[in-house]
Length: 344
Image (cartoon, rainbow, N blue to C red; front, side, top):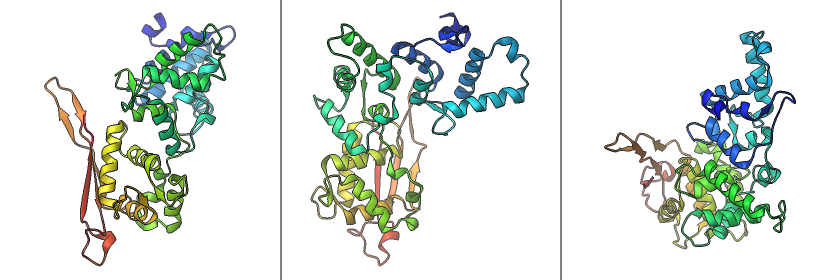
């Protein structure tokens, strides 16, 4: 624990003789992650990244050798190390990248292997509904244990006397890593960081400017969510689409936020009131969402007597809706203003 107090927790796990890290337990891995991810945003970045890379160099390069390095040499060494660690080249380290660097339980490592990513948010919603067994809108500790048990059952034999012990440790560590609001359970946005999807298609630059969206782009998005190919996006398909939409504008959200967004989307874009989104309705929605009139108001906070503040972020999308339009230029009229508010 001395190295935690002195500022380099990595030294506790580094063997100077073998020049390798000793194995981390799942709990120790969680402690190291939280030590460096000081703002809890799910990444080691900015000043955190500088600190982490500096401490890593302290481990692998003896002090007498470090003293002989110039600033340029040290900077070049750090850059080369980062190239190896930062596999997606986003200039920050995520949990999966750290798990590949620090040796930990093989079974625990399975959780962070990239091949475990889901194909789409529709698949994510299927997993969410399966393990939110009490329909509370959260994955609680017992439900998380069930999820980890099923995911890891092929890696740990259930008749292993340490099986239950490992699952409990992994559950506690996952909550330590992903339960950002520390309520002892995972809300929807937290669970989505644990089991990410391959790609949020709505993040592509093409959707920033409506003029660049083609019919083929809309068809591609629609096909991604219309998984049963029945010509409409409904039920879990619609929730998957809305999850991706919320991820563009809000870091933290739960299932009640998803339900609220669903009601607003259907109210304004479900023209035939069938509770589903058709290809034409999707086209109008995407054009409006990506138009230059869309805006995000990030300056809304609730301030409290103790000096703290909570986000009251509002997303205002000025949309053109032919159901309410009387002008000829339907897609450029500012008729409907739909506001999604983060509710605390």
